[in-house]
Image (tube, rainbow, N blue to C red; front, side, top):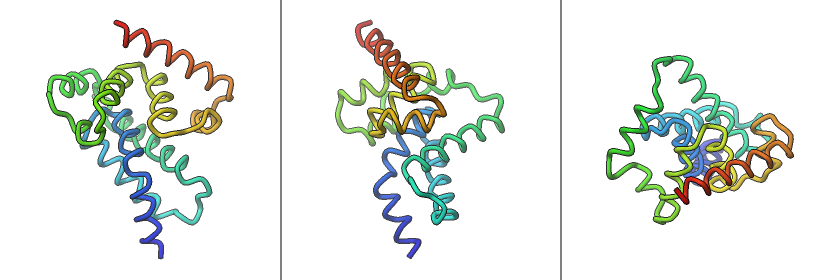
Length: 159
């Protein structure tokens, strides 16, 4: 029974969770690991979760932060350069639409807080209320952050 539930969750949320993980780490293999580890944790504690999508993204972010703590020498600039130099990224396989690829590549170049809120809002279909819960902030703070992130992204698109 629980295997069927995990399989349904995987089918429903795998793409969004992978995109979120990839936006955090900018590394295809690490994003895959974070995604699979997140579903493993879901398998272990599925009975305790009421809002699964929120919980999955929160677990993924915590796993990523744990990874960063273990690997202090992590350099996001070095990994981002390697991704941008390579003509075909794993992102090409996930996102079909060219406009979305362009937009997503601009988003992942933004600072972490702007990047996270845009990914959650536009790519993971979270509401402002859900984002505020996930980021441990008020709704008005999340709205302000989203406004600033959009403004910054617009500036990047024009430049």
